[in-house]
Length: 393
Image (cartoon, rainbow, N blue to C red; front, side, top):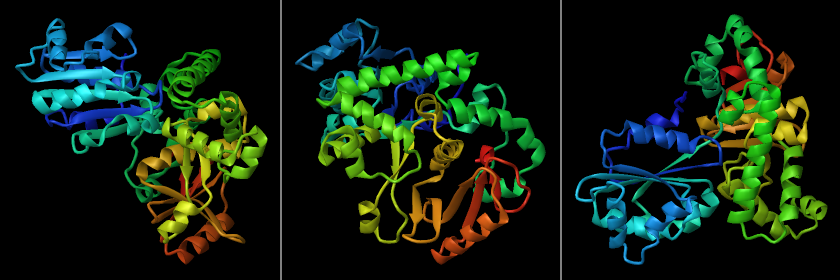
């Protein structure tokens, strides 16, 4: 059974456009399945789905004369004289195909759909000449709303945090709290969510991490110190929600600061980690400030690092908050701090329980920054205003 992801409708809205559709995201988040569903939804037989990790299917795009690609496609039933739909899965496996894609896009009525596992890589692969020729979408592991769909259940998720606060209720919380606990512990990779028992979930998580390391880290990167990069990944898991100390990381894994920066850029570009910068009204200070780190998926970090419940909970809240917009954090050298500031207008502090004192502290810091909306995201249910159960987010 296939479950529809929220991003699917966004992609379908552009089926009639000329632009190339690029679906990017970490391995095993469901990009291929989503594109297969788009492929099946297209009411035309003049379409083809190719896996560019398959050497046989790569040969279609190995022609020096791009017109010969048209003849190759004809053997697969594609009539280039008509509107054609070409799906290319894992485009990073064959970067030389991009020039051919541009040529076919410019000279024929071809709608391309591409998937890739690395924004870090695709930024270098796609030439500037494709500017204005593509729409880029990003897919991540399931958020909790999608998690419930994969569990064959659903909950009415309100659009804004204010609505979520006003419409929360203890009955709904009790109904879904155990599912949220599962989501928090094992994450949102679709195949892990669909696994039938804990042992199977753990095996899936091992396989996902191995696949990422073998196919992205070892193949896409050109780093010599692969062991140091692996060690850095494990260190970052243990530092979820913490500010990065580059010099300390450099010392612990035995490489230069410059190498650490290169590693971090790669890990972010391949969707393994997310970084957030300090909240400030000065863009230059935001860019230069210390970054906080969060992991791509709770299941990965919980399985390989076994961090404290508070950090694991904070990571889950972050992963569900980022769909609302850009996220920063705020921290003074002494005194107040805020875990997340969304789009510079909504403050969210993360607490397992949360008290009136926590809310008063958040209110003071938020208002001092000119941020009028503020909420506590809690694991436990609190009926008072501005306390939002994380499972509602």
